Every structure is written in structure tokens, then in C-alpha cells.
Length: 218
Image (tube, one colour):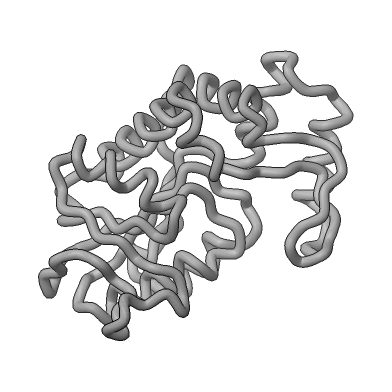
């Protein structure tokens, strides 16, 4: 029988204004672009999502932080003791989140980036801490799963992960296999539909992303 805690997490409440503002800001700063791109895997893509530029724009960064704080509150602040940023993108969001939510913060280094003591988790970890993993986006889920494993090895309990944008490329299923429920503020379909509704992208852009999402994974 499936553990009810591992069932597909429900979508976050609408936060329509926040989602629209975030989508428009990501497009404005070039964090989300449309056209013909090549993925790291070598496959083609109809869009490029690069959230590393978000902290360089105060408006977009503020919207991203507010979005993640709202999502964490919807999840329930009583469900986690600490926030754990996974990689650079995760830490950029988890640091202000920790301050605003009044929660301790942990930092999970990438694979092969130990601190010299063979430890990937930075911070005063307390055994049994329920840690909410934070990342700016989710693709296949490999990096977040790796962060979850590192946190568990350090003594934390990890049942939930929160991302700003889910690219809908299998990450949710990968996390579920690791016993982690995924919570996201938005996803690529939502961003595209929002921008199309705001007349900021063409019908061709919208259809290209739809074909990519519905077609076979590269």
C-alpha cells in the first residue's frame, strides 16, 4: 500500500498575481527565452530557462523569493525544521527564505565539492532535523536527489523538496522514488500559458513548447 505522504503533492494555491508577475519578469530579464536551443544533453529545445540571472535583477529576485516563501507557507511551516539550499541556485533562494521564515539554513554542495572533510552539507546540522530542500528549478531531478541523499547521510530527515520552476522532465517521479514529495510554485507549461495570455510570446512559441513537452524525451 502506498504511503499517503508520498502521494503526488497537490498543486500550490493559485497565487495568480505572483505567478503572472514572475513569468513576466523571467521573460523580461532573459531568464526564459524562446527559439532554437541545444540542451546540455545535445538535444534540441524550443526554450531556454536560465534562472542563474535572477539574483542579478532586484525585481525578479524579490518575486522569486516571495514565491518560494509563499509556497513554503502553503506546504506548512510546521512540516520542516530547516531549509537546505541545493547548489548555487538553491542557496540563492534558501538564504533569504531562512531569514524570512525564521528557520535555520543548510547548504548542500554539489557532488565532488566537499569541504575538505568529506562533507557536502554545510551548517550546524542537528540529527533528526526535517529539512526542506530548495532548488531554483527541477529537470531530471538528479541534483536534488543527490542533495537529499547527502542530507540524509548527515542525519537529516527529508520528505519534501520545493522548487521555483518545474521543467516537467521527470524530476517529480525521480524524487518520489526517493521518498520525497515535490512542491513547485510554477512549471514551464504555466509560464508559457501565462506569457501567451499576456501576448508576450507568439502562438508558434507556445506550440513549439507544447510539442516538446508532449514528445519523446531526448
